[in-house]
Length: 335
Image 1 (tube, rainbow, N blue to C red):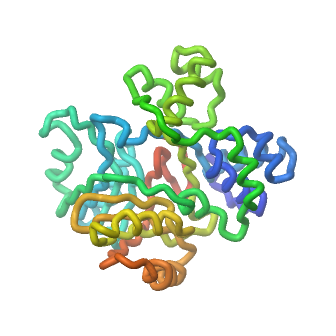
Image 2 (image 1 turned 180 degrees about the horizontal axis):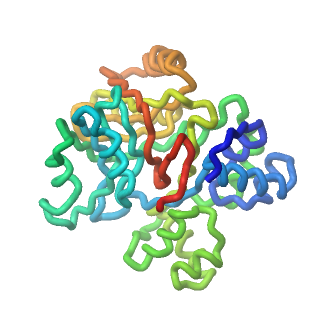
């Protein structure tokens, strides 16, 4: 992976925004929306991918897997042990969003836990017993709030117009109902998409043992039912977002849905979910600086009725994103 400096211009950022809106949109459609050539889009995307700026992946929606639950783990560590623990967690296939925060004293991550495994056979049992762990809390995600923030956070200063966004959205599948659930036969297909969410149908057919038409139809069924969703990993620091924080909210039960929906629409929020525990909403905030994070909390967050408390935990080092590892602030494929 290239590690030299890379400067992104307006077109690069608009391509990244386009991918957030339609992760598998053909380069030709992105080019039409941006009024540039298809070759320009393809070349710039490949350049950003080579430099570890962007990866597209597909992930199973935990709420559509009856035996799998998504948990956010907060792990207080012994001095000097956070980096080693974070690296070990990041290399697991069942973790995502691994970060070192709270001045290097806390590791946090998302873990997909298989409920069919025995009580003493899993991460939630073994991790608290590790010698480097001082404190441990686990919070199950009950609901992921969908909003404009998770798509538009990358568009600051270079937003696409409503017309451009409509062009990109044409033909893009979204969850709209259906009862398809992930089966063991889907694992190879989803595995291939998790490595490259923009992989062509020929590649997906070869990986899954299906025909191209069968692969396309099955992916469409899973997307429409909400069992699978596409995600765009972007190296935050490269686009100038150097102040990342986990926000833990305490909200009255009657306000949980409305507060979550408001947060999810904020440009600064890339993720918001309802969680178990005393702090019942967790959100990931992306800002350019601590000053911008402060302004966000004291203005937009302060204006939301129903927020009782908020704990802000700066994420000093991101070790892993949704699927891809980070090295020197750049994305790299798993070994």
